[in-house]
Length: 159
Image 1 (cartoon, helix red, strand yellow):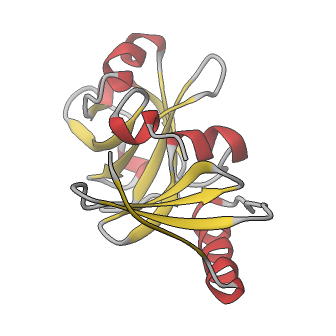
Image 2 (cartoon, helix red, strand yellow):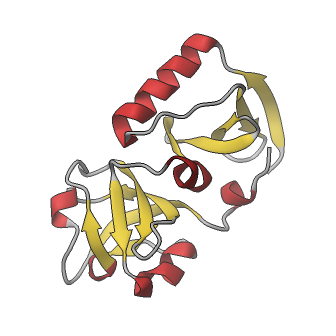
Image 3 (spheres, helix red, strand yellow):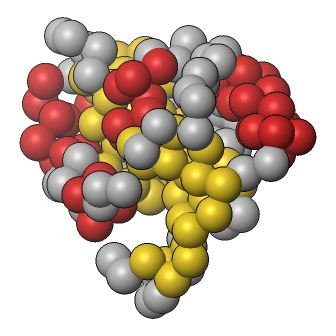
C-alpha cells in the first residue's frame, strides 16, 4: 500500500476519535502522536497512534484495526469464535453461526465488530454484523462479513 499523504491530527479530531471508540468499543486509546495516512490505490485511511496502525476507516467509519483491538482489548461489539473457526477467520472468511461461541448483546445489524478466538481472546478480524448479537449463536448461516483480518495488506502495513 503506497502512502499518498500523511499528516498529524488536530487535538479536537483526536478527542472526537477517542470519544467515538470509547462509545463503540469501551476502549480509550492513548498516544502522544496521532497521524492520518491516506493511500494511493486503497480506498481506506488509517490512523497511526505512536506509529502503529491502530485505527482504520471502514466505509468512512473509524474502528480499531486487528492490531489496535489486540492492544486495547475491546469490551463491546465483540464476537468470540471457537478453535475450529480460527483458521478460516484468520484467512478472511466470513463468520458462520456454528463457529460462534458468544457475542455481546450490544451488536446491531451493520455494526462493525471485532472477532476474537475463545482460548486466549486474541483478535483475529474485524467484520460487519448481519444480525443482532443476540441472534449470532446458532446452527447455520453467515452472520458477520469479514472486512479486515490477520495477514491482509492493512494488517501488514507498517507506519
